[in-house]
Image (cartoon, rainbow, N blue to C red; front, side):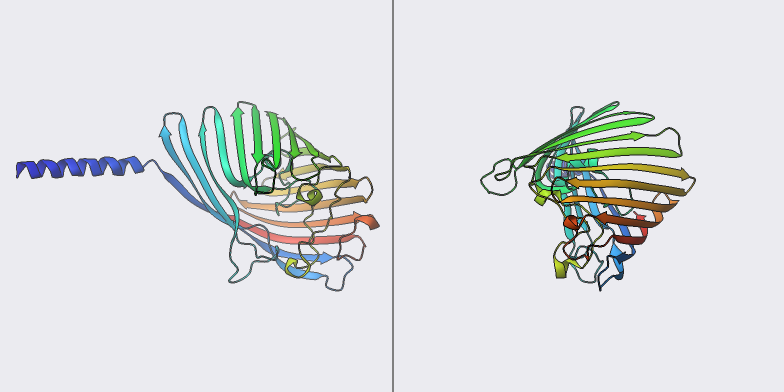
Length: 344
């Protein structure tokens, strides 16, 4: 009997130890609902208003301490935007945004999976509330990425390589980026090398930030692509959508220009007082042969709470005839946005 009692006590102690071993796992669910309305004027018969989903998402992230100085991390995130790339629709399946696992310590963090790219994290992040600024090159996320991030005081570094699909190219692209920051300014640089297919060009990026006071923020960026850089079909950019993608395909306000040298340059200014923010940006996208597109955008944001905001924005695009979108009349086009965001 005593032997049985001792065994039970040992079994309970082992179970308790096993249970306590799982306690360090910390998981957190999160979400961001971003809905609104926009009105597009592109000189086409179907111009008008439409409900919009501005990249809403839900997800879960987890961390697990493995040993002193070493932690495992993971994230799984889905977007709720419909398959047409515009709406929030009943019964539409969610789409994967990110799914990665990683390790982090004093030496930095390494991640593998579908995730936000080094290029976007350093020189492409959005200025505006819809999180999908027009006239930027590159893209925000991709699959099969191995990425490394390191931060030490004022310095931050990132590196990435991608091996996507059995297409004859073991490595599809490389990326490198760096950032140096001070209380009133920040400088960021990035480089991407296309290794996929016949054309293997490079994409360069730089962005600077000036914060002369708590109220004012100034920024400028430039993205420069070689003639041979054809990743993402020439880095098509643009937020102003002309028609439903389920009808027309993925048609944006700004077409790309493959196999041409291309530059995208922008300047940005923001003023904030209390909950009120007014900001704007001018950007110019130039292709050697296809011509130019320029964008002017202004936005008012009411920061109702650290996790809630309301915004009203206006953007106008002017394009050369050779850079007009496939479904546009060729006239200058504009978009008005009204949106509301709640994070949880």
